[in-house]
Amino acid sequence: MDEKTLIPKLLDGDHQAFRMLVDAFQEKVLNTCYGFVNNKEEAEDLSQEVFIEVFRSIGKFRGDAKLSTWIYRIAVSKSLEEIRKRKRQKRAAYFKSLIGLEGVAEVVASTNSNPHQELEAKQRMEIMQEMIERIPKNQRIAFTLHKYEHLSYQEVADIMLLSLSAVESLMHRAKTNLKKRLTVYYKNRMI
Image 1 (tube, rainbow, N blue to C red):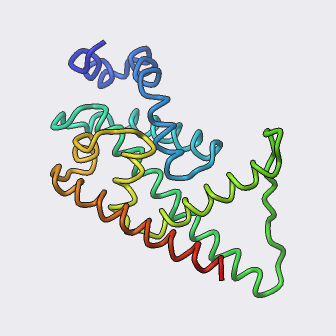
Image 2: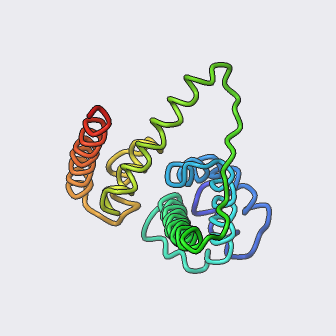
């Protein structure tokens, strides 16, 4: 079903049309959220929140962009909210540890047959994710959408409401910043 047919049905509260929308975009939304939060369960929860938001606010969809672009914007927004929430929780946990309250330990389940390789891969991913979180917000969004979601620069520009040249510039700066940060990180580890 095309957007011109789907949107009026969504506006009328057609649950079958909404199911079609979810089926069409579920994997893309999940991958977008995962690219930001790097946790499957959180990404699944966020993707549900995205579709709840889509259902609640479809009446606000103006049609000045594609429906998919609008949905991506909601996914990015929800993901960034989750990251901010995480940072607040980390600060709270830090302050609790300062006053002697117990911290929460994270247990990582192993599914790989080689624990050493799995640990190295997990560490590399955590380092990369940490470095991505340290670059400026717009660079982080553009980088995540392009590299993790495999969206074209034009699609990223549409989602971020920027020009194509602005996205190209953001991507160049993001790559440069990540390269510098990773170089410094690994040089410091070798010392």
